[in-house]
Figure 1 (cartoon, helix red, strand yellow):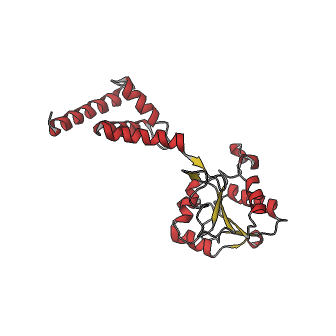
Figure 2 (cartoon, one colour):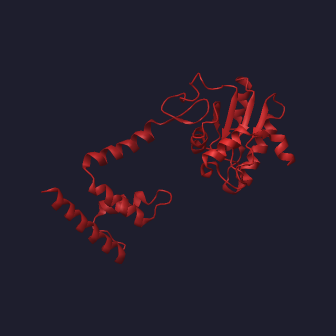
Figure 3 (tube, one colour):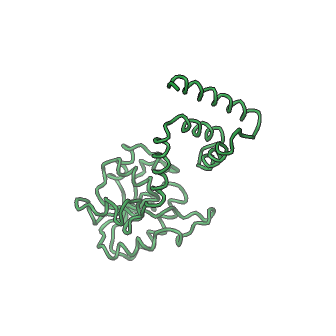
Length: 229
């Protein structure tokens, strides 16, 4: 079968299924329905988008689909969290914590892995990180004990840390978490800083442009001064 004939067949197949979905919740194939149901579980993916993604995969060579599927299985089964900073890593210690060129005396505290990537993209920070795994949010049932706050306190004591940069989202939950960490470290001889208010109140780091975030890091301020203001 030639490529053009194969492509025309798949196009007709896709059109038939789309018409089917528009008029009924039933699928012509149980395998197709199962795949759509799994994709629809992903955040931001509805059933129509899930169907479009599945149909796209059906158009690909089976080898490409196998590579796609195996990469997800390998990701879930082999991914690790750094023993020091809790960032995602391929090894027990991530490449940031194990990099001798990084400044080990400054720790940037962030909410999640995406925030590490955001700060790294600014190229304005050369210290280490500490990933909390979330922020304090009573409405969501997330308290201090659910986060990596105690490990941060222990780490500061062991590593002779000179400065902690609180780089959490400027939301009520982020500010609450900042203040909690500040109280936990208040009697520890370490400088506690927070991002300059170039990051608008209510914004999350991942949605802040690199230039603004970079300037907020460079122009960071003492946390106690931010409370007064």
